[in-house]
Length: 151
Image (cartoon, rainbow, N blue to C red; front, side, top):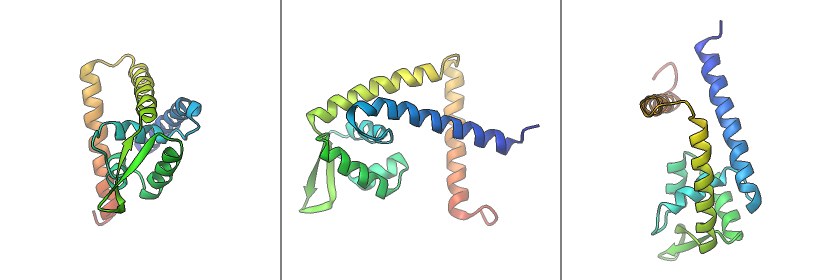
């Protein structure tokens, strides 16, 4: 019999692997990594801009990964950095016109992928799923911060 640990780990790994492939396929035409899809979509929600630090926190990503993505997207003409008080570290990231077009295309593709991935789930099932997965994520964060034994 498969243990809860093995089942959970296998399912999470499969979701992550398949989602990354889908994102990579979607970002391929733009010459960008699949992980950048989340950054573009997130930046698009902040008309006044968002800092790299806030982007990393919202997306649950390392600052170094966000920094590399920002450099690549800036080089590709998808985002601009607007310095705040001549401080590049606190610069606000904003989409360019091209960045908005790409972000909108990625949102459309993501909507299709999420709809197809949740095929067969009712709205109630979907709500229970998101509530459960968010609780699991929060609990795992607490365990990772406080430790498994002492937490």
